[in-house]
Amino acid sequence: MQTDTLKVLTYNIHKGFNSTNRQFILHDIKESIRQVNADLVLLQEIHGEKNISKNRFDDWPSNNQFEFLADEVWHHHAYAKNAVYKSGHHGNAILSKYPIIEWENIDVSLMQSASRSLLHGTIELTESHHHVHVICVHLGLFGMERQQQLARLASRIDSHVPHDAPLVIAGDFNDWLGRAERHFTHDLDVREVFKITAGNYARTFPAWLPILSMDRIYTRGLELVGCKRLHGDPWRRLSDHIPLMAEFKLI
Image (cartoon, rainbow, N blue to C red; front, side, top):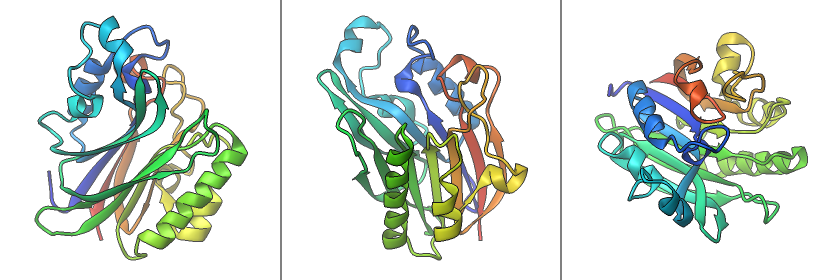
């Protein structure tokens, strides 16, 4: 963990199941994300509680999924549910090697049947004491729904993140048409890392043959060192999304 760099991973883990929902592969996900050795891991579709599956799967962890994944690597974490049902709930999580000094979940749901939220945390880099704002995103499936959620996200950043503060926004945007750009680039001076380096968003869905650009990493106030799409084995056998990773340097 270098104090002048920050390695970020974003991943929709499909509640710990493979793309067909037939295999519980959370243990494989844990091993795989550990190999990446990111400082920050932003997760979507992660269970906070799921009572039925505990009885169906022998290897279901005894603690929450985010605690199970964080274990002894990421000592700081925040979880916020955005989908609640009779057997439990799932939502977004931030796992961090650095202290999370504050966090808040912002409900951006427009439909009761499709709850969505933004998990906004602030981390403090241990030696420099710099604060970095981190927002874990999972947006809706419908265009009009996403437009309103993006407007809420832009408003949140404008009101709660100083313009000179380092900022990372990452997650599952469900924005395969690329319409989030107007809110970020034009309104907030935020840039997407793969658009910066390759001119196009990374294709992340479905994991076995990615053709849609669903997942993103946006930044402001940080210098991009590099980014990569983690495709191929083992990732294509795990969730229905593949993860994205970016490394930043403090300006």
